[in-house]
Image (cartoon, rainbow over all chains, first blue to last red; front, side, top):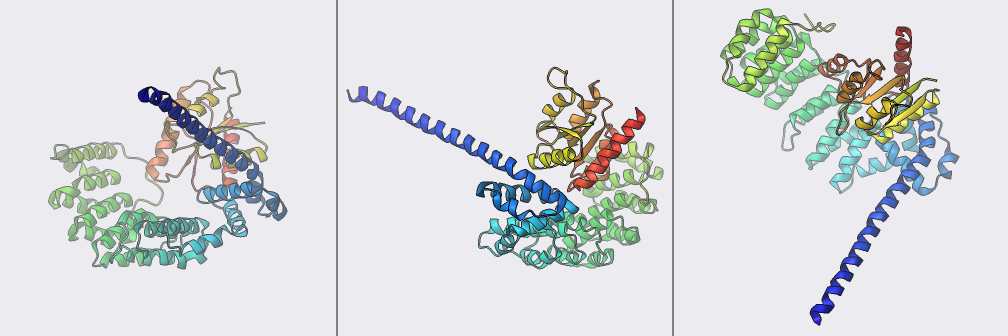
Length: 323
Length: 132
């Protein structure tokens, strides 16, 4: 009989669990829909503030608490997506609601996730006054916080961040080169003279990032330095990024150095050298590119085929790219 | 009144663009992904609705990317000639070229200025009007 009672008991348990589960799902759906309602109700206040720059304090205070929170969430979500006057108005609104002050405090939080979030938010707010906070976070013990700070310094776009970002590639808590490249590439008024100093650094990651960025900024004046790095830098990573940079510069003056690298340089950099020759579109590279078609690695062969296509059918040169 | 379709999976950005367009005197429709965008652009599920005068498409969307949507729009007779503006976080030269190669009329790089977006919508519509 015990077994006989167990079956209905088990069935009852399943029913209860099922009902409870359904309740949770329904609850979540309800929460989602009420969240959506709160967001929809808050949007007119948010968008008209972004549009006009006038903070309607009364309208903000009239919003119920849930809608005020929805407004702040949407404002935070939009902050990294927009620029210009709407962005500036959004920052003023977030300052008024206290969100920016809270982020500044969270930059010193004991929780690393809060510090990383604060770093990203302060960068998206784009106030140059946040630079010191972000530079501090650049030396945080937790990698995700340092990366957030680097990205935000890039977003802030202040030329003064270039040297600290390059320095962050060295030491006990280095930031990955690609994070630094991405950050500095966003600094439109990047001082190329400061950047070029990185070419003589003893640190290979600093030299690698520097040549990469000189290519991205189309720094034609630095072409001889980049050619030198391609020819004789002790790091293969630096030489490979130098080849990539020369491709971006698109100058025929780099062709001889690239052909020499293809003949004598390490095989691992050959695909990048071939891509660069393709980007420059130099017809004198055709024999070497044909030989690369039968090269040892599939990457090299694919790069050579693509480069030959580009050399035979050159794209329209971009204004100011060629020298 | 000109109709603009906004296709973006980010609801905050989509709602902002729709609000801006509506405020500027356009009729705005929206879709949260490429598939829904393709249906809406073709005049709805039965094709009897209005085909938009311009379509704003986000590049990065799940399932169907903006580029795939643009290709599908160009292959669909009803939308083959509708101007498209691509919203993209990809500002690399090659990616922009890829957009223009498939017949995109203009592109806007994110983070974007909503005011500039309105000017571009106006300019692309004016160009399309002059062509017609």
